[in-house]
Image (cartoon, rainbow, N blue to C red; front, side, top):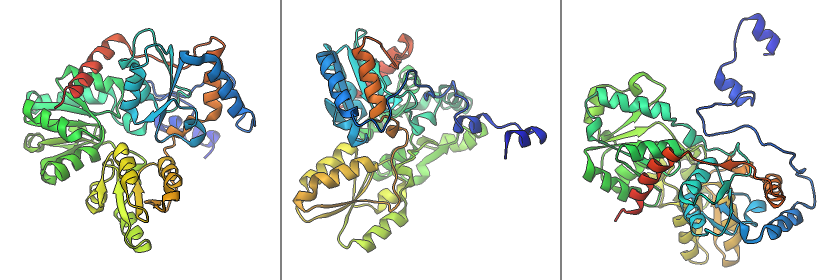
Length: 394
């Protein structure tokens, strides 16, 4: 339908439709839509040489972080690789680096800014590299949720636990309300701690990690978990349902890990006899239950490193990493395939491409600070409190 037709029908596109069309920005979202400056052409054959030259010119002034899900053309320029929190801590351990170029997504760059010194400047090569999961919980929605819990008379019993894949605002909310942050590696420890502090947990923003940890790892039942939908009045739950629940799960998910299905697992077992199915805990509960192994990105990498030659693996995580691991271990006769037959990259992570990286590095080399990610001091203080609670976990 054309704009003229919508005007004739007096139909106005919704804010979400405009956002998806790239015509508007959502001020409540962590995503941006602008990248100032002229990017080099992606067909420029000199991009690799330009990136190397700019990085060499900057020397020790720049430290490039590369998340595991980045494309190979970008990861080759990373000084360190890893998951989001490891990279943020690596940045904090390099105080001599004036510029931290984070090849990841927005919430990761925020965490790096929170943990690094005031003298260090965190740069995200493309401000539109957000995270759909992190965007599923805004500060306003979570504040409204807390009001619902208060009205139900249970807020004092609830301890928020927020996944690392959340905005600085959500981390700050967690710190302010006595909660902690978790990663996919330490979620069980974080929940153990939380249940020592209170009777219930509000788990943000990934429902699947919260459910899988509670049920698979801690022995709770699915009935102990309820799903809070921020788009429904009172989260779509009654006060009685909230009072009976142990785990109040936020209705959020990873757009990549959430696509894997039980059919994916059954199909790969039929196609590849003897295959080991290894998935990330952000996958749906039925997928995790059907898998042979479940673990974080670092767990997946270590499991494949330790796997015997000739073993077969179907991996349920982001395709860039799976493809890189398949190439890495091909010489050891390890067969590694993507769990789903449909190709699926993390679309926002892939916004960090070589042209954006070259533009950011060349701008910094010329003395122009671009795309700085800076968390305000109050938000930083409460977010850091939540992160410090996580670091103090036994």
